Length: 169
Image (tube, rainbow, N blue to C red; front, top):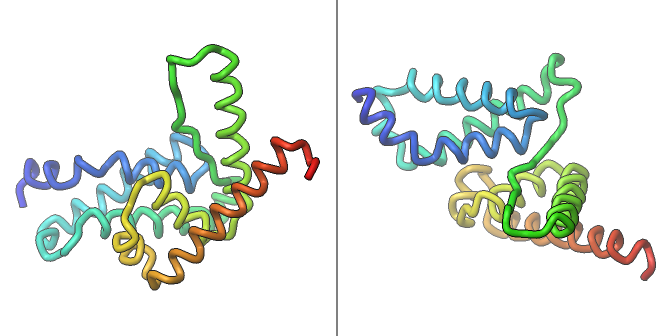
């Protein structure tokens, strides 16, 4: 496969690879490094690329595995999950502050979720993947995906309610 064909194949979803890396790793720099590593690995598999049924799903799986390996490594002992791709310039300063606060709370809540729930929530609600794509990416049964997503959403919803009610039931 020529370089231009490879780029045309990979460029449409490279931002998704970065966002998934950013979700799993501590910093933008770590996410950029992870994305670059995955793209290099994809390039090394360039000749076999047409054999894959879904190159995007393959790349997302590679990214997930690479990031999880980084998190498990000794040099990544200080990494944590972070997500901060929210912004809207049309709101007033107060609304921006409130929105950022809410996003920060959701991030904190997501950080506390079990790994599987965190991944399913990220892929479904943030990356907008279909259930079939998530099934392929995470090698999970459809029922398990729906259960994990439901539990993750319920946890986020309940903890946000607690926060906004200041603990008053």
